[in-house]
Image (cartoon, rainbow, N blue to C red; front, side, top):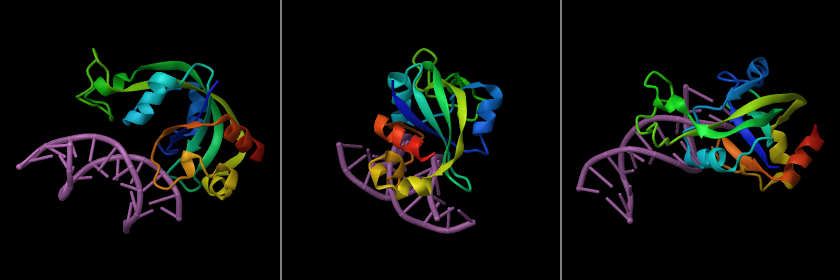
Length: 150
DNA sequence: GCCAACGTTGGC
DNA sequence: GCCAACGTTGGC
């Protein structure tokens, strides 16, 4: 089983929103690295840290699980959609998504500030300067360590 | 709201 | 294939 961290802006889609719908297609990712992970590496049952970005207290707020593996992001084909991409062809889709299911809320937010302060996590892509990936892998060791902070 | 970091685009 | 211009992300 693999572990991941996925970012979402709570104003756009928060952990509460995920809980309300139970499971949700993770559409709108328009970054090749993130796409490759969703298309090729994420498997049903993989565990996900749900991270709130671009908000008052950025950090990990909950846990989710992959319930459907990579499939074409059809919102890229829709001219009305926010993340429409005319270069994505239904016969050869450029963008992929997975479905996530709500697991649980953390007892408290484990903030970015706190993660950055932990020397054990210095190699996490999340805490490295300038990282903008919205989907990133988490090692089993880091996963356990972070959950231990809860 | 600012701006640094980074990815993408497109002219040449 | 280089690289400047531009757009986006996301912490602060």
